[in-house]
Image (cartoon, rainbow, N blue to C red; front, side, top):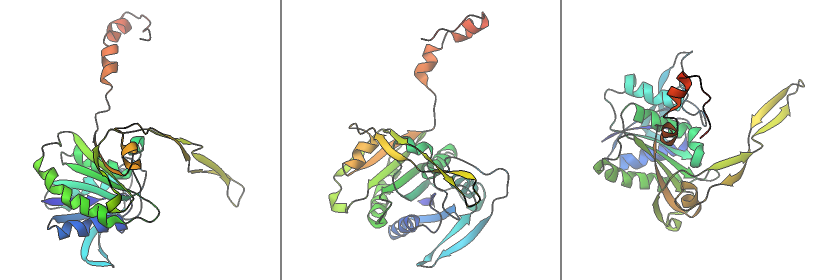
Length: 264
């Protein structure tokens, strides 16, 4: 199996290198194409108004690894890798291992998840993997889990239109209770922007925010990770509200007659 590795923490990030080493040890062929610097929380942005550059890189602490650094977004990396950089399409794309979790509605902002989603849009199975520890992460156990997980994925026909968003608790391996198949929870933030003043007296705004509410109902990714379970959430890119389509079924005839559409 040939796997493309990417991320949003940057090509030199510890997480992607740990994952690369874990997969190589499992005799899995890999290619690394990732942003040349951190591009966290850029969502599914792509670059259209400036040229993209791709340069081969080596890793000082892992001389046996090589990769390609792209001066673009995570989604750019996947598109460019599949369209031009790789001699053949990968059979699987893995985005990560991200430093910190990607839970609930955070996946809408995540460059990690968006890179995996781009692969799905291109018809390639994908996994986004994050470690829920941004302070002192140990990526090796997470990398080992993913390497062991790949053979299972290869045997299952589950990638029709979904990617797997995996979040691994940032605890010791012996403290992990198991694996849960979950749905996305919800996370809300208070005071997301801080207003500051630069040395010239001009105002600027810094996005920060304090987590005030997280849906921790059993069955959600938030609940699973908080209780030391590995969370695996199937995510797809069809944002259509099918219930709303049914409720709006008679709108075209009402609009044609110029009538007011009542709230239903």
